[in-house]
Image 1 (tube, rainbow, N blue to C red):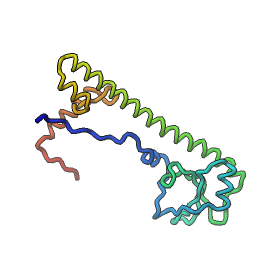
Image 2: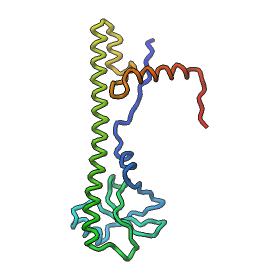
Image 3: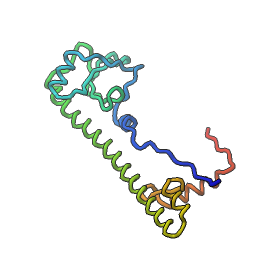
Length: 183
């Protein structure tokens, strides 16, 4: 029976994880998302921002105007205020427009990171295909099929290349038969 290398599993892109780094995670133990008030409905129409909402901060007892980065999960806070002191229009004109630019920049940054990671994976896949073709050219049909199928260990140049693959292999060999613990 042919021994196969274990397959590495990688989450390609997790927008929630990416947004967690950039915004506020809405936590039901600390934040209570409020139904849209007349104020929020007006702000959504006025600023053409359907992602605006308010939440009640249970620790500070303030109301916070926010913009969803990931609806229902991650938000960007725009302004906090007491229950009876919503910000005036002049303040919102400046704050929401600036925060729209900021939120858009965060979304662009998240998208660019994801596109960069995907391009690196695509390049590594192309390198893997070329390596499989080379193995086939050398007459190593079985090795070529294993490489093409992803069974054979392979690390693309952008992912660290042969040096990283060799280092990983050496570490795995050193760790064989040892019990590794932490703490």
